[in-house]
Length: 442
Image: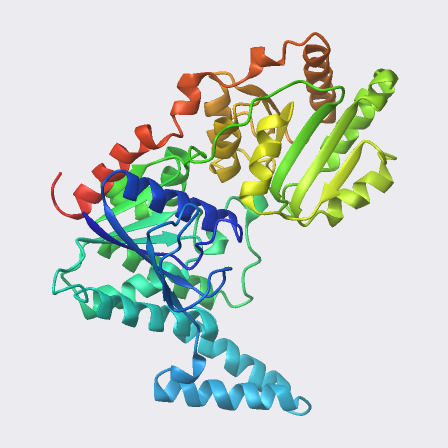
């Protein structure tokens, strides 16, 4: 099958979704599909059209598109230029020009930069469709997150209505449809939310199939008036890492817990540090042995917690690194940390859960008792505790520390059958099913 994969995010060392897309493209190619990728400039790649020679993207042609607001349709471009010129001048009438800029965003369904990228990316995709000796692509596969991938796909199918389209949702969209603890702050008027919900219905209506990283997210987003689209939805978990060899684990002299990724504001470390403090108070001899490291973005909140709870020498931070650098650290950690927000139902499958499982190490998940993470760990692979219960966290740390002391942490390591659930061998057929539905070949 010839697939044009349209994703704003791509590079495995740039964003979590960039890593997910790169792994998906690699799996599809390894599975026998022909894949080209259309993406943004928000990555470490170079050039407008290239074929990387190494890494997950090796041998896969990548087309990169830059946002260009100066190429908007004439009326929108003039309004954009005029309102932004007035905003820069400031002073009298600033409120009016701010509202004018907001009105333009509502008309477009996004900010101008996102809209212009979606327009240009969609135009390029439509041109590429028959650009290979007249042989068209079979399928357009667009990936959210970022939602502009779907806006670009809408542009493509508007120009070429016969195209078969599968759309992926790694998160809810628009932002006001997130679970309460993650929900984006709505605009005062609610006009943008209503505009984007109409766009969402257009996407769900036009795409012939949909993919989600879990059944819970699928049911959460496709509820109410959107429930009628469930017949075209496919739950396909995130992929783990099966392309880099897994370094052998050897227990060392320190008990190492590792978190790798982006700490969203909603994923608070407060209860974790309270539980760690309780554990160290009850087991003071563990202070010399335990080390907890946070690798990635937004670690300033961790450093604040270190000061607040006197955890210097126990908890440390490290800047974001490339995935190939982080991978050995995951495989050699004693325990891997996963942090979610308290929710009535954990509808997300964090992409790091798939990476953690494929690393083969026990997981300590601060996650709701009902949710996707709890579903996975009900088969073993680690411990789950409530994200806001410091006492549960302290008890879990005590249990893990005791297992480490007795060299029995492997008792909690994920079983091969659990790791297989995030493997290409398991997931490639699920993608095939979603793509075949889009092609009308169920």
